[in-house]
Length: 150
Image (cartoon, rainbow, N blue to C red):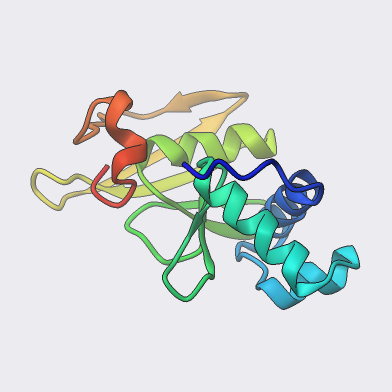
């Protein structure tokens, strides 16, 4: 982790990224973030780097936000639908996190890693309806070491 002090814009940038992910199912780019928050490129980059270093979001090599937990900015086998909108989750566990973050009922579609079979679960009133198993490949203490493998 970087020893850089927390940039002043870190929390407003984080909030904006999550708001856009929740509303539109996609992450904003650096320029969009800067324009929306009235930041210069340096302040935006510093905030994104700090948030990435501290696991609030994950940046790709091209600096695009690819994860803002529990939201994914790339298509995955884990889809969440609610109120006519759709989001991608980083993993099966995050599908529930999206609905919890949105305080919404919805439908979850996933794929079992073991056999590739489809999984479908509805969430109503905060409770899952249906059957399924969430299997995480790594223990939680190792999640931040490799988000993609987890």
